[in-house]
Length: 151
Image (cartoon, rainbow, N blue to C red):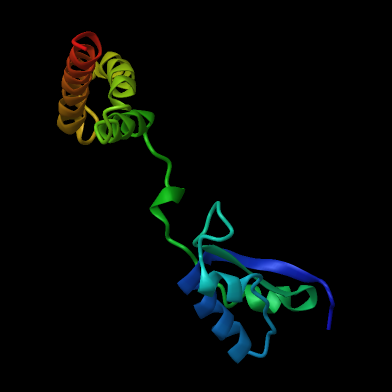
């Protein structure tokens, strides 16, 4: 058996634990770094706190790869750039601080969709979010200006 460990899989905690038990049941030794630490406090490592890596011995990698399920992730499909831009505009209404960014992105979005016959998905929501960003920015400016200058 090889003494070198290689990465077989990286994923969420339940995915890694499930695949680890499948490999162990098939006689393939596994190693998950920081498993005890993650169970005590998943955010102690910072960064991508909920992702783990599963390691197997290098000489058993081909056997272990047959046990890894195929992922059907929607992120693998290419997205239309206008859908991505529209999504960013819609997310900008979450905070008052991001509303001006939503106006900037919304103007780019409206310029890009101006002459299109077929509008992108959720176009109406994106336009409504743009106007909400305008409203939040104006209201925030008025409130801040009144607080700042009426002291």
